[in-house]
Image (cartoon, rainbow, N blue to C red; front, side, top):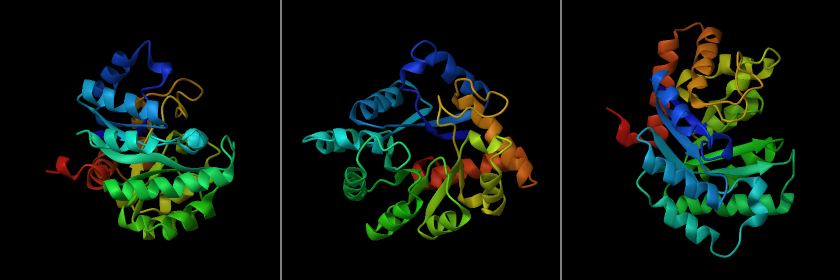
Length: 258
């Protein structure tokens, strides 16, 4: 059994073949998909997909790119969506100091607010971090995010950051980039991390793994991530699939545990 812990099937890239993409995921052994909201409308669509497809769950939140668009009523609407049965997490939220599509001070303010909103809702966090490693760790500590737990999605930091996040009870999610020949730092981190701390993801439609690099990514491709991790850690694909699925359930969906 495989679980894609981070997908964006609500995006228009899937409007022409969404049913087929979900079907292929099932055929390739994907048991569950977490579809992650990036703004209010995306979060709404994520919950609608969760209602439509048995294998899809949802998260709600506002990505740092859209932090500038948060207005009166946004958080009230997110709180209402978060009460839906198949919403498992709050996110993706965080900081993106690479593209800076929202001003950095706005990103920081909204990040702190959303951590606290997740605390009200008692939901674990899905964290976006790009070129803001130190700031992410500091804010998670300052806002008491250890009490919520969660995952650093599409991990791009160094091992010291990974260790700091593990110490706060966060998991590390590994995307398809781990299959890229030049992703040496991420590969070394994966070798050092305990398997009990790892989730796997596609972040589809982005970051398709080898051998589909450059094409539209989809949840069925999460298998390549698991295979690469198994190779690097000298263990079986089945062991990685089982462990990462169990890690996902413990973090986001304990009601799915045996």
